[in-house]
Length: 286
Length: 328
Image 1 (spheres, rainbow over the protein chains, first blue to last red):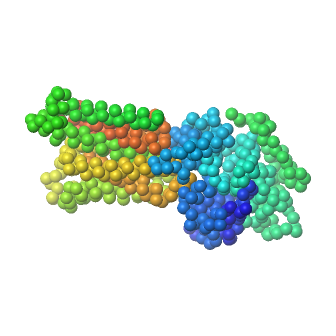
Image 2 (image 1 turned 90 degrees about the vertical axis):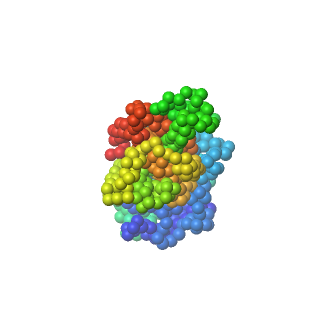
């Protein structure tokens, strides 16, 4: 079921157009990876989907409702966003940060209900933050902070989860564990997950669909296999080919955390990464 | 539970400071006489207590409490531990408006209103300036404050020098500008108390939404806070509080900066706790500072702003040095 969709969206910052005619749909239980080079408009697409930026042309709908007509606090009950930047100079504890996810549901003067407390504890458990819950967020490592912010978004208990490069500060073990958790959540809670990802290996391993952006346009879209292999039968524009040549081919010759050979993995069986063993062998665990 | 016991402790500290403020002064009055004076004896000590010390202590408490609360709100909103009404130029804007109101010969009750309007304009300007660069960086806010303070100071000087009508009031205005709570009348106190109550009420209602600004305005929006409305409301509460403080005592620096900042390390960053704690601590601190101001060189008096500057400026400098790696 389609939860969140953008139709023929064009967006700009001032006179600079950053997204042109993009259509995008996100359904329950699927993980859609948004990939593309820097400046392609990935984060802008995410901001449009989250209702933080209004499209110049086109519209975004959330459960069939026009997103522009939904109040911020109603949006926050249905869409959670994990931001790319999450530094703060204030000594909030991890539990307080996770509790921020309940802001839209708190009573007068910020009173928390039993539901709020339970949701916060569940999110803390889900990201294994129990031992860090009382620690100050500004004293944690980048990876721990990232998990705390992810827990904050989970505490919102929304049907849609949008993430802007959720693995960028994580070591390989935690990258796999985080994406494994997202896949698990998408399956178990029927969450609709949209994530900007840089790592095509991770995108191909975890996403049910990949949307590739270049120069503000969606150049390729489909299953990882369809997007990352070059076919002449499918739709393939000139920009699509340029993107494929510039991004996918170098990847095939690159040392990646899981060894070289995206080609082999993509053309053969789908890889089944095991995050448990990867986490054990991760050099920078806790 | 923990929150309540912290607040109870701080309230007790405020009561003790206020008691000290009433008991101690240039003229020695025994505790028994003070008690009698409070309940209406008509001798000299009664006049001293009821017309001088009590309004002064209450005024200092209101000024300190509102400055600290305004500081806590501004720091949370701008995500900047070095912001307060004084540093951002909000107090200077309020001063300019208040002096203009006096020069124009407006009635005394209008002066706090003018101060509020001046504070609102300045704090909104600071907010806009701070957002120009995308993020609200620590440095932009301080620079905006420097610019606004110098501008307001220049205009105030111009008004003072060029106005004939002020020749008589010049000394009073000068003393007021430096931050003094020495000449506070009951009606003045009543108006200010109403304004402060309004601002504090707003602050308490908004406190938990200010928490959501911890990771920036955009994340606050995704957490369910309407950024435009909340920002406007918080800026309005800040203006009410700093306007009232300026109308009562002129420029009192660093209370709004130091109190919330220090409290955060003791009771944590959650504004639901920080806002009321800042009010109580700020009130107690300024009552004590005023007590120092009138006893250190008794029978002469220092403006209370001199005391807070004396203690606050080095503290601010230390913070600036410590946070340098974050700023740049």
